[in-house]
Length: 207
Image 1: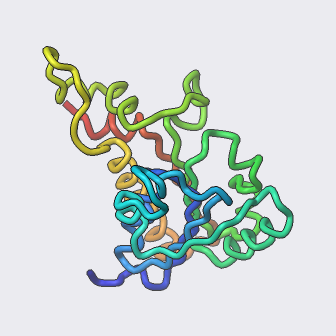
Image 2 (image 1 turned 90 degrees about the horizontal axis):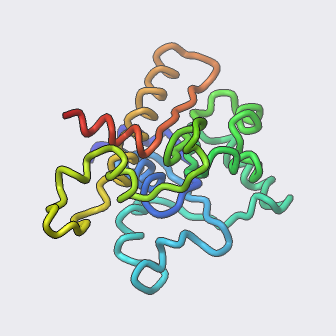
């Protein structure tokens, strides 16, 4: 594939599928993606055993990885250095968690005003469900999409984690738009890209 994003650096702070899927798509286009993992590592590494499950490798291909605990002063300084040199930051924390980890938008934008800050959550930054966790099947069900797939006589969830993957696609789509805007308009400030699993699946499930 043509490496059209070869001069773009992405810092990804995500686990499992949504954030990693977004940065995977950017990496496939040539972006230099650095995946930041907590000391315990992305739990998806051990999905069905091992440290490099096929699922983990799929969504984290073409990336570099570093272990940082941003609650540690020395690790936070290293993280800040990555952010200062980055074009895009992707996180998949529930609202408010990034701030506790030193990765909130306001702080990172002080380090790098041109940073494109992508926040992916289950239900968005506010509202009655904002602090609720979300998973692939939950987003499919809440959007009404799951009803189209499940046989009422045998209600079993089958198939791939489509809500997780689609949310990653929407996030990458928004990031590409923000990158284009930043370069086209030569704006000194990067845009915030806000994506929720629920809204992504609701948009996809248009009928």
